[in-house]
Image (cartoon, rainbow, N blue to C red):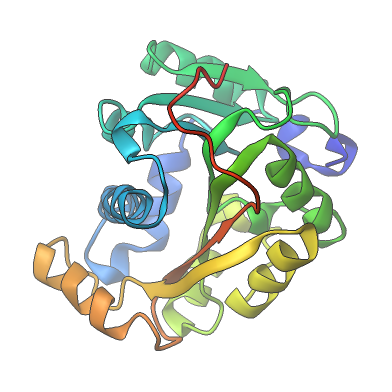
Length: 246
């Protein structure tokens, strides 16, 4: 990823990020924490269900982690957690807020980690901020740092949902967003060498309740959820135990 083309490598990370996002979805009657909790719960369940290593022992990397808003919800539920972002401001704030997480700044087109470093990589509503021409390289870097047999989970906004498009349009943070459909995300992952494990739509009901997440499970095939997840596996023999991702 060429940081010269990424606004967050040059601009200050907004202090009012949370307020901007919450204002953009106020019509739904929920806040961004509801979506964060839902994705964290989904990610843990996903890892435990399809990974050879349980979430509690997995070394995980959050690519494009921002200020690490999801990390307090992930700590204690995964083996080890690391985060990386192009924004120095965001990483500074994340490191202060989450002192048990290992953080790095991405200063060039390579993630600052060795090949095959993580059991699970994820990126949460990040790719729509990456210039489309750089999407293949973004995914290729995730492939590089994922261990054989490991997972890469992409959570993204669903452009087929009109309320999602309205929320993105209303949010100043997303003024340059280019939303990508799940079909495009699956193609990018396959082209990088990943094998698709599953693809589902999420958040059909703007309700912070377990029954609403159960509805997600029933309707995951329907392309109308507010967001989606595409999970893929890197081919190869999986590692047999957690290692230090840093």
